[in-house]
Length: 342
Image (tube, rainbow, N blue to C red; front, side, top):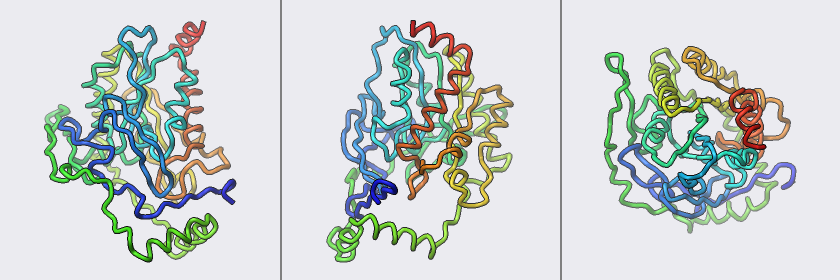
């Protein structure tokens, strides 16, 4: 049972519930960032993973020396690219790093970031060298992120479109009082019901029965992340245009990778893929893009965790394979990679 349908259980006293602290700290530029050189465990209902940050607060290895002869590939994204609920070696970024030994790979993503915050981070980092390609991993909730100044219980900056110009507002980001308390737990662990649940759910079989019972009693209801009207897409359109311009000024190319919703892949409801709107924007701005949905739809095994919206390790393998296939269709990249491998 554990081999064919592993479904671990972590008690309520183990799960990291805080959004302020533990792995995060306040940042006046983008709202929050990873604590530099911090190392701890991050526990959710699906997994317990070891998380280690580099000196800049990213879940990545230390950046290479400016003297490195290798060209660079930069990855921007949110929790999927950050490696939410998977170990470091299972992240699609690191699978690609193994497949691309002749490139320096930079992962400057962070969980909860919208495209707006990713653009700001990319503009302000000074350790990115010899960049040839920037890969932006776009998720459905980025549309709402880009239209908000408060997300995931935290303040953030927000771009606005004023008189034909993209204007950044809300900076420096106002610091909340919650950042003063960085404790990672806020749970009463002595409750008898909690202890009994922990004891019973050590059995994968009992845990699975309970999970299926809840699904029958409380059917899954998809909540749209945002009302994707033309107005709500304007800011995302302008941000992507600004990102493309910034990337090209650095002499690099931009590739947008579209992460499909779990609802689309697992046919949970009559879900209309959000990718259709973003693909239209990419076509309008002449940005290369890759929709991962066809790759995930071909897979028989589960690629998303049963709880939540994120990939498991198998999902990261699918994403890495898809991105590598797409890179090999880009003439400039293929020729460049072939020349370096010699």
